[in-house]
Amino acid sequence: MRWWETTIGGAMRGRIIRLLRRGEKTVDELAAELDVTDNGVRSHLTVLEGAGVVEQSSIRRTGTPGKPATVYRISPDAEPHLSAAYAPILEALLVALEHRLDSKELDALFREVGRKLAEDQESAPKSASLAARARLAASLLGELGAEVDVESNDAGFVIRGHACPIASAVRVQPGVCRAMEELVAGVTGAEVRECCDRSDGSARCRFEIRRSA
Image (cartoon, rainbow, N blue to C red):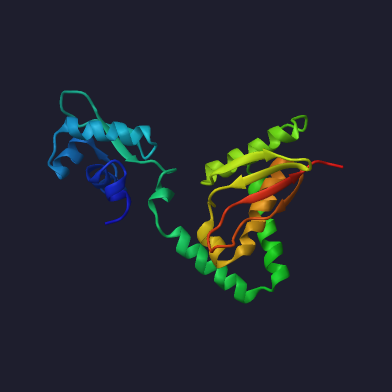
């Protein structure tokens, strides 16, 4: 079984997701295929809607008296989270790039990726303090899956992580941290130095954000 068939609130919700990935369905259609009551399906759909996994896509009129049926589908934003393909494909891509590019080319590529990611993010106003910009960068890393704290020091600030949102990629190619360095630099508009902890085979983010001289 795929992970979401048992972990998103239980096996029944996993079965609902599986059916909706095959096509849009009404409550009645889901209930018939799952052999449960309409109310049972509705309670699960309410939870899945609240989690952003499913959404109402349209209203279907059957031509018979009564209230039109609501049609449900998987939310487009949720579909990527239901796939387990991204990590292994990324790892294989990193290995292929490492074989094709020298270290300088690889570093430049990772930095270009980080700058592109930064361009797609909302940056803090230029008038914002460095502390506010550091917190914004930390918040973004948190949204990506990191567990981080922001600490101040004499030189500026440190974003210290307790995990890494791209740990599997970092284990294959540590240089991918350069992309995250450029992302933090782009969001904060400050000089940033990546000094992530990769000493024990795991990965924990650490970015030093320096005040301007």
